[in-house]
Length: 143
Image (cartoon, rainbow, N blue to C red; front, side, top):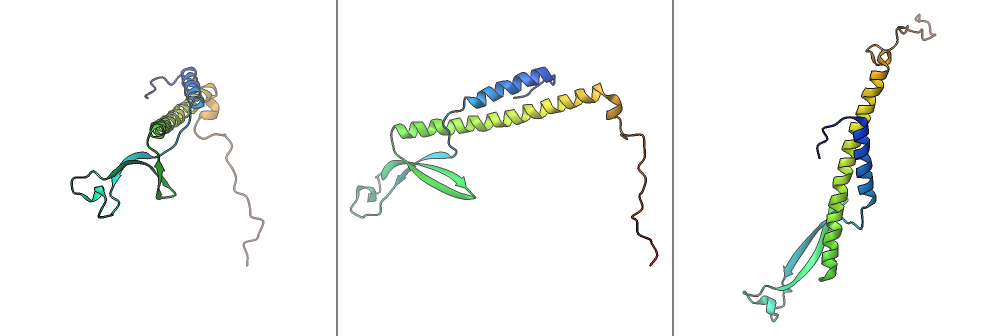
């Protein structure tokens, strides 16, 4: 999303829109859902034949936790669809958080510009007219 306007009212409206979208976030979970086929390793099993697709499909949810990949089995059927929806909701949540930060930062900048424009003497470079004086440390410099 690219915001063209930097008018505080427009940005506040956009910020409220993103807040409302964040409030509507449902069940979510991070990760990737992968389908796996595997071979059990038993020589007498059907999966040992060269033309066999193996066992499966089985489903697994993988994600990084503290720098390590964690894998969790997901049962076939409705749980796979539910997990897909939860992953999609997580992606939507992340995009909304990114939008919220972007809009909020622009709103803060716009308000800062307005406050500077309303008070030009406080916004001038140099600040106060009085120069600070160097203070004595209270110790004598003789040894």
